[in-house]
Amino acid sequence: MKEKDTIVSIATPMGTGALSIIRCSGDEVSKIIDIFLKKKLSPRHAHYINFKNKDNIVVDDIIAIFYDSPKSYTGENMLEIICHGGPVIYQLIIDEILKLEDCRLAKAGEFSERAFLNNKISITQAESISALINAKTKEAAIAARESMSGKITQDIQKIDSSILNARVQVEALLDFSEEDIETEGLVKIGNQLKKCKDEILGITDKLEKNRLLFETSKITVLGKPNTGKSSLINYLADDDVSIVNNEAGTTRDVVSKLLNFSGVPVTIYDTAGIRETSDCIEKEGKEKAFKQAHSSDMILYLYDAQIGIDKDDLEILDTLKITNPNILVIANKIDQVEKKNLENICRYQSNDLLISILDERNIIELKESIISYLKKSIKNSSPGLYNIENVKHLNRAFKEINQINLSLGELEITAEYLKKAQKYISMVLDNDNDDRVLSGIFSNFCIGK
Ligand SMILES: Nc1nc2c(ncn2[C@@H]2O[C@H](COP(=O)(O)OP(=O)(O)OP(=O)(O)O)[C@@H](O)[C@H]2O)c(=O)[nH]1
Ligand SMILES: [Mg+2]
Image 1 (spheres, rainbow, N blue to C red):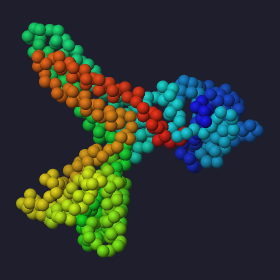
Image 2 (image 1 turned 180 degrees about the vertical axis):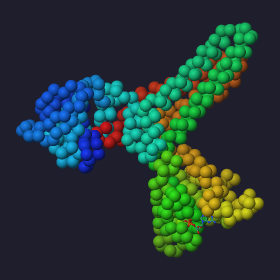
Image 3 (image 1 turned 135 degrees about the horizontal axis):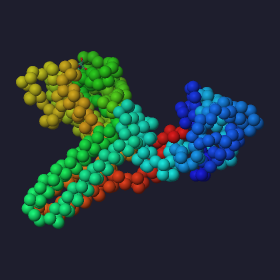
Image 4 (image 1 turned 90 degrees about the vertical axis):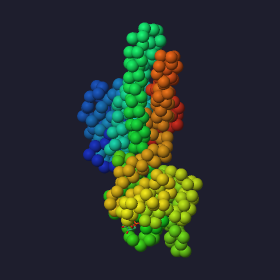
């Protein structure tokens, strides 16, 4: 397999449809046009034409669009063939093209990889394209699109200019010594620093929130029998996912449901209530519950507010904590506890969430807590600007500016802090140089992209 081979692939979903699009990119595109279309195509024009095989038999009548290098997606010569949408038709066309020497099927993401190598797109854009194609929710698609369009990069560039502005003001003040100018100058710098901090906070908040959109997080609900686990799942899913009954031991297997949790894709798992049992099915359910909890991003641990946390809960929590410490502990059924006794519920920690699924009490808090626990568990697979390293650089820049103690005596150190902050911002803007390219981001693309 040569890097300079001409690559060919279906660009639309495989199967039957009204139309299919076949893409070709590379040096042999002119030959493909000469041999199968037998006509010179003017670039970026749609040509209605017959695709004929080498024996001059019409395989299909198509629309062909030729893009001449470098004005194409990949930067190479490209041909797009829009043919009838049957799987046999597009396969016949691809098979004919593949008979040519130096033409081969494209690997996943190879068109975008070539676009990147030919400087047509940045690595951030490439990752955003991949994220857009793979988006599981509307919110994820919008976030990927925003990153792709360069809007977030522009926002970060704005922060860069704001810091530069502050640095210029500090330098100017260092050169002046008249009292009026000094006081006025300090106020101006103070405002500028506040602006920088607000801008950084705005963007980190957005990046942190959006990072969650690109992974399907796993949440396991666990607890003793009858604490309301299945009720909680049904409530969050707004669906009858799991059987709810006042008999303890209703759920025995792991039941899962994919949810769109305010735009965040989440698979939630209901599990069997944990208790000592001799019933072998329940025992197996219990083992499965622990296994599921361990492989999840977070655990929702439910106990009954009427009973409070007890020795058995503590034992279960100790076991869970060993392999998955990301546990949100929740007391359910507070509708059964008198208001004056709420303070006396025996809790795991003082910040346990108190809820009632029945009365829908504190559900907003529950949803907010879940999102903040998920943020802690998020892996580093987010695309482009949503990459964790960028969030860290921005946080470091904020820290530098936040420690500035603005006064005339400390202008020099202020200048230093600002210089460091700007260095972190530039790391975010220059992250095209990192080695994620080599770690195969393009393999996450679908074929034909
Ligand atoms: N009063 C009150 N009852 C609730 C609440 N949440 C659930 N229940 C009731 O508690 C009982 C048990 O609920 P489930 O959701 O089946 O509990 P579970 O934890 O899944 O139970 P197992 O599957 O047996 O482990 C049912 O009768 C529910 O209607 C609540 O917030 N308040
Ligand atoms: Mg249940």
